[in-house]
Image (tube, rainbow, N blue to C red; front, side):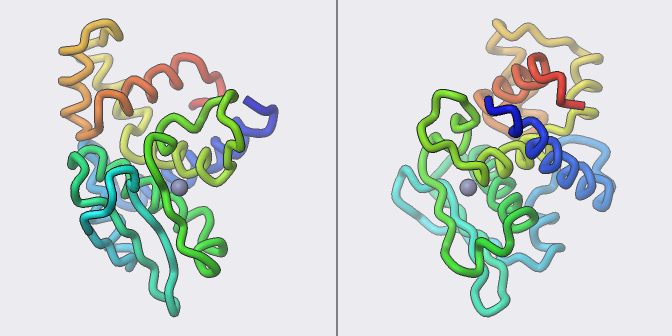
Length: 183
Ligand SMILES: [Zn+2]
């Protein structure tokens, strides 16, 4: 991880927390579709090719998010939050070209070993994680039940509560445990 990346991630998380406050989200699951629509962003679902998770663009002033309708609903939610992140954080980039997100990189790109790690993706992922799995709500859920990272059933129960994939939740929990920047 480069020295600069915790800061940009923290800025992205802060924007997500501001949205959670604005929409008075106090319990899981976070109403991601409602948040997107209330921001006047058109949310479209279409059967894209398997490795395409979502896209974001602005056409004639109209903000649009496209999500792969063939993916699992929990993955669709993460993609929607990621694309919302691009609209909130990177609107100026979306006016010039359609931003297309392909494959697992949406989740796994936040990794020092990734070649050509794109700052925009790191920021959008940090935003999406914080938005769908807010630290406060996660800590509250953990306080109530605790979680054993090796217990798949526990992870899946918690993932179900937040309507995220088990892999996204693991990634988030590991991030919370390892990243002192995460507040
Ligand atoms: Zn992206």
